[in-house]
Amino acid sequence: MSKNIDWQNLGFSYIKTDLRYVSHWKDGAWDGGALTEDNRVHISEGSTALHYGQQCFEGLKAYRDRDGSVNLFRPDQNAARMQASCARLLMPPVSTEKFIDACEQVVRANLDYLPPYGTGGALYLRPYVIGVGDNLGVRSAPEFLFSVFCVPVGAYFKGGLTPANFIVSPYDRAAPNGTGAAKVGGNYAASLLPGLEAKERSFADCIYLDPETHTRIEEVGAANFFAISRDGRFVTPKSPSILPSITKYSLLHLARERLGLEVEEGDVFIDQLDRYTEAGACGTAAVITPIGGIQNGNDFHVFYSETEVGPVTRRLYDELVGIQSGDVEAPAGWILKVE
Ligand SMILES: *Cc1c(COP(=O)(O)O)cnc(C)c1O
Image (cartoon, rainbow, N blue to C red):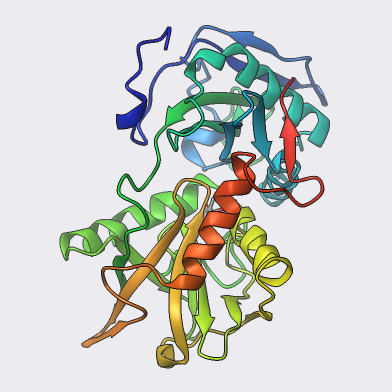
């Protein structure tokens, strides 16, 4: 409020907030890190992040609780995933303790940007690690930078949960044993053209099939896929080239423990979509995007409805969003209070 932000009309766009955290790695160790007002990164023109894509990132949200406190949702999971991404790209890991401390410092330093309870907004945190320092040949960088900045973001769906349509892409987002499971920028650069081609045909984004056989659903744009089968199971694809979504694993847990559904990580064949009554895309930014229909070649398959969210998807959404804002009791360890 002191920042004069129109909380009701926040989107998902960059806004410069007051302070961000920066830490440098050199000679085998991370320094203590510090907050800075400078939102520019000054790095060597030889940085591996610029030429060879040696970088990874994370995305998580802080929510204002009904009682005024601040909830971070499962930051330990983001820390662990960033450690896995760093390992895949030969970058030094950031410990869970350092990762969470950086996130907490950034939230505390930018509390005026945290959307109020009830607006549906949140403070989105963007941690990243990049290879920096003078370098030319293809090798791991001599130095690294770990930073966390934050941006207030709005509710993805202003008018409630609105289904979107998707189209199967002829492109692959990752190779069978490539970097699909790591949250790295290269996967995103490769997804820009397929995403644009889907949007030009009036679809929300594209669906990627498994790169080996092109018969099974893997990802929905930059989100994970789940479906509810006719016999009431929560089904989600399993593959080494899928990015393990924390939202997806949270929904899987809630489906089993709170909704009493059977859950399955397995194959979702693109030519057997009539096995499912509902489908959705999930991730931190949008939480859940209900999938109205999927275009595959000349076939258009509609799940529950092109205009209305299905009942199981709705219950999963309410449960998860309720936990994040403190209205529903969280499973042990899911909410970290920022003091
Ligand atoms: C980040 C990401 C997701 C969603 O992960 P969450 O942890 O739920 O935010 C899904 N797919 C891709 C490719 C991603 O990069």
